[in-house]
Image (tube, rainbow, N blue to C red; front, side, top):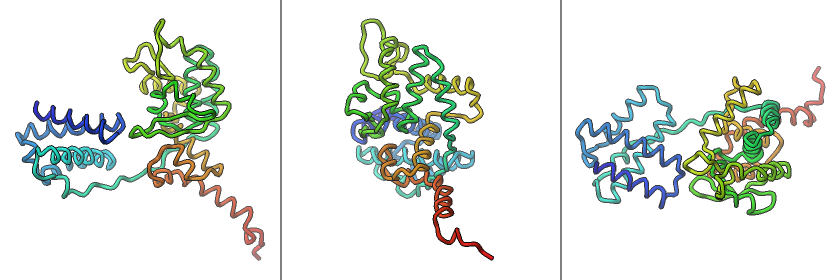
Length: 305
């Protein structure tokens, strides 16, 4: 019970001082709860945990075939937690200090083609009901801006009025950025605003762009959006492609790069803190660069006898 209270205090610190995103805090909390239960069974207190104990604990996930990214996240959560315990004088030494964090291997995302995205969007435009209009607007915003699904569902109504042809996005760590949008996307948002009141309780208001009568958060949830998206994919015969909001974000980035957008500009639009995260998309440039050399380099036009 005492450890649980310490954990709750730690999570509050992550929110107020560290500015970690909600999803990260939830993951960290679950990881640490799992850790606490493990050592509770072993009757070992937090101030008795040594580096070798943590290594043994982590090794069970390695042996079970967990991905390196998951193991790295668990160690990161524990590292933050033990730093907090040290600062609060709950322990005398951080057992994580002597453990090398595994490097995360960044996999190339599977990319949707332009035709696949077009098919999805055109199918979403067929439904003229208020639910159809909302879903179409959300899908087109995702593909037109590359924002995260969490940023979309938690977008405030005021975000669309911050600056013309831009959306004000609150990203990871509560960092704000302006993301450009086209006239077409603005028009989609305006049309949704005409039916937005249908998603509000009678005589009520909401700060959210996409409010919900049923959600405790007051806005449509990521889970509900994904349910609607999967149903649409089935209707469009695209269910084999496992389309997700994150794949639409990948498609946005890849398709822009393929058409010559600057990497730094893309980094800013995606809200990446480090450009190395954005560089994962540069693989799409290979074919384009080959074609440029093939079409323009003098040697490519010389016949070899």
